[in-house]
View 1: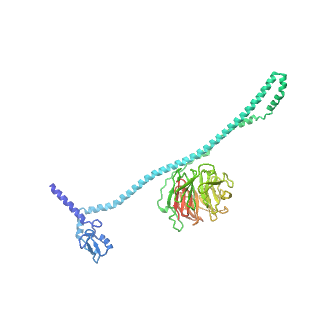
View 2: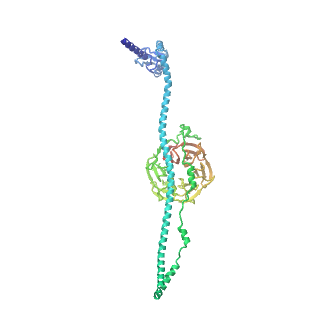
View 3: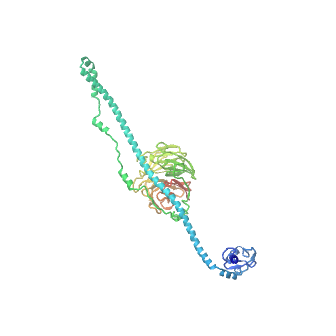
Length: 557
């Protein structure tokens, strides 16, 4: 019985295999649909599969099973005999109906599973990205806190140094006064004591001998110019007191060091650019390369500021907290650096703006030293000009610097709400601007083109335009995050070939492009907080990212 059962099972399996082979198309390997019988070898193939084969050769068909050749009749594939017996076999095949139902359900389920797998991939990527975002944001919070602490510690050091200098000087002065007075007192006391002794002895001869000397000495003591005791007490009581800035303390408690905002990245390209121009501008702003990370090693930055390039493709970037300038080639390869923290010639303290002259001198705005420094193209110090103040030629804390076609130096004097023009030798030429509607509220960048100055105005969130004489002409832009709206416009440059103005929108993390009359053209996204911008050989845009600790090379055509 067991042997018979196994034999029956083997036969069933063999029959099933034979049926499956005979009822399947040798081309698509699926169940035969409208099977056509080839006249030479009698093998069966789906009509649709034969139609596909006939497209390559409309006269013959090579059997996919035995490779024999059959001629296609004049009526085409449709005129080949249909194997109706095979169709009947297919219809009565055991389990066919159930298999078709399962197959249909499977076909519907596979895409769902695939979509679920895609979502798992997104979640895996999101978890990895979340970890990176957490580390990056944590670093930025700590960096901002440490920066504020560093500023406060710097002020603390300044006041402690002033305190030490005052008490050291005061102590030395009092000690010198005491030593002088002590010597005079000892001499006077000795003279008085000698006179007392002569008088006490009452020796006529000694009185006669000492009278003239003692009288003269006592007269000198009497005529001594001794400081008024009350005035002396007043000077001795002089003290240095510290008066805390309570408003600053209250503001520290009232205001936060920043904000944590949840942002969802918009992936649609249409959300990244807007255009009112008819030209094809879709290639503007494509990231070609990112250069630098946060750090102090060569090629890295701690909050880069201004950026500039020359006709050779060299790129110079101010490194604000590293107090230096770094220079790269047009491909972003590090070449050299110069400058270090200090107040001496060639040293820097918070460098911001930077520009190249026509003969490749490097102009650096040394903001916390309130001066402009000029270097040759290797970073060797040449000269400097400027000092702290608000008079002509003096500077407050300033951010932007550029050079016009005549190598005149244009300085955006941010703290004094004005723009100043200097010759290349530092000679003051003129100034314009003030605080007001046709002036500025903390200007940050300025360029000159075709007889007009274009100035980014942080407080008014716009670009203001002035003529060669410094007369207000027009402005464009307003506060916001939509088309042609700014949140803290900073770096600004000009595309002289196409008469376009490019402006860094530092808090919207993008760059806006305008025509000279203020007509909006487009915008493109950048790394976090773009502050400096220039055109690299007129073909690419270079943008420095303050909180991204890097600069980017982007497409521009």
